[in-house]
Amino acid sequence: MSFKLANIAGRAALVEGENYYDLETISNGDFDKDTTNALKNLDGLMALSSELSKAEPSGILKDANIEAPVSAPKNCYAVGLNYRNHAEEAGMDIPSSPMVFTKHTTCLVGPNANIEMRSDHVDYEAELVAVIGIPGKDILKDKAWDHVAGLCVGQDISDRTVQFSSKPPQFNLGKSFDTFGPMGPYLVSPDALKDKDSLHIECKVNEEIRQKDNTNDLIFNVASIISYLSEIVTLNTGDVIFTGTPGGVGVMEGKFLKEGDIVTTSIEGIGTLKNECKRISNHSGVNDS
Ligand code: ZN
Image (cartoon, rainbow, N blue to C red):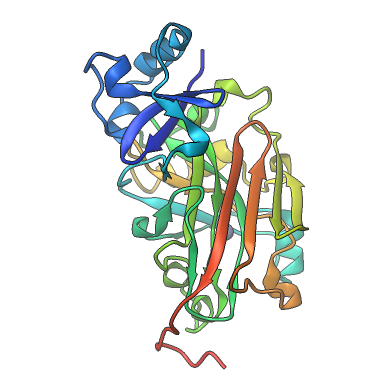
């Protein structure tokens, strides 16, 4: 059994095909509107999903205001240099343990949100995102997938000037500007995917393909990241994990995002993000010349 869970204008909804079904409505009030609460009852989501054909759709996705699929997660983790070709293009050694940083949860936005840029050094990073369902600590690698409620597509948008402005670099603020975490379009439960560890991932800027890889190239896969993190922190329902980006990011060739660019990010079997870039006022913290 599987499910797809979306956040439509602040209300949890199950997705089938082009339609969405308001969760509180179809569950006769057993669920409320909150997507993180919904992730606490995965069996209930599976059961309701299997009966969607009997329900009346609440609307169609293409007309909907889709927000980030998790409402107010406690934590958002991200992994750097987690594809061999990206570590190599960055001139860095292959990490021997996951290089983890955080994105502030306030940067998370929906799959079609605008990316608001405050410098001319903003970059894209297509990423597979895992969201925790069952909380846990000291999770064994071979049990890790049991703790994943769903996968979605993510963009770890990065202001490279801020990211590298201090020595040693502190990634979190440069990757946490408001709107720097588009994610969605909805959570897809892992069992909906034929091979959850082998998914084509792609990022286009306008019509140009900039990143193209497969998640089976991850140095630390989803299970390894979860096991590693959970030895240190308790993973909570709704916690978000960006798993790293493949080679082809813009900073290597000076191809930064510009006003009006459309960033299209897709992962096989999950869906697509489409985000337009907006150049707004400069941030004043660093010299960005
Ligand atoms: Zn990243």
